[in-house]
Image 1 (tube, rainbow, N blue to C red):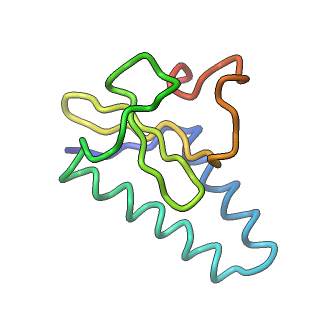
Image 2 (tube, rainbow, N blue to C red):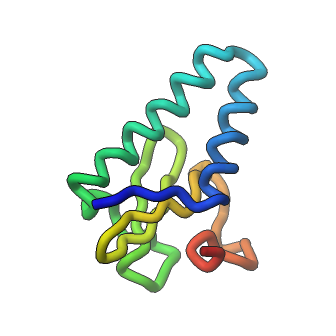
Length: 102
């Protein structure tokens, strides 16, 4: 299974990296590397993520990595990473949901 990153997800990674980088360049890089490594597991095991409770679509799934939700769309030939969002964020209050953007 091919892994692709949507532009919003890449921007999320940059934001996470930049935030952690304020304290430590090393830990910022390592944290983002670990997120990417978690996502790479989807190439072999695309169904390991759980269904996103807020989404009314079985193809929208997520991995939980520490305090972050890595949301992706499971498609026939690819996994499309949609967003990497902190778990404390309330998706119900967002006008546009991450899975509606791409």
